[in-house]
Image (cartoon, rainbow, N blue to C red; front, side, top):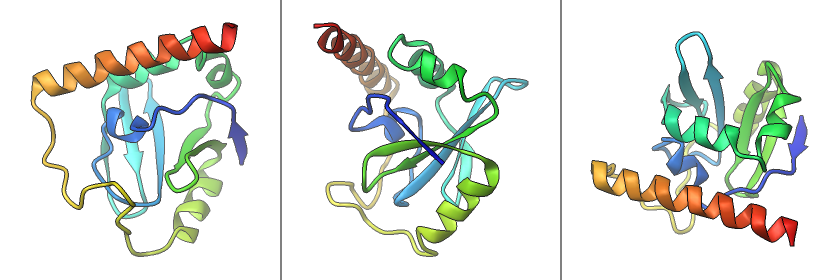
Length: 139
């Protein structure tokens, strides 16, 4: 696995549509169906493809992802680090994370989801955060 030096929003997994509590989650984009998928070793599903595309096209992210064609993105939620991984590496990392989901500090046990307005605001805040992150790096 390769650690990626990409700025991580504190709620990246939530913005990308991951509803679970597992300590590690894998994201991958299926270009044929234009769908972002997630898998935490316990559950899988489709994420927020629009949020992913905005994030992936951002200047602070895009150069890193272009080098990783075919790789999966593994987010370690405990360490707040993102890795590029092969399918085999991702499966091993999810298995290593444990067979039981844990409740992470500060993460509610149940996420009821968001209204459309809340989701729009979260995405707008995310885009603003990305912009300010690039400005900080350029300074």
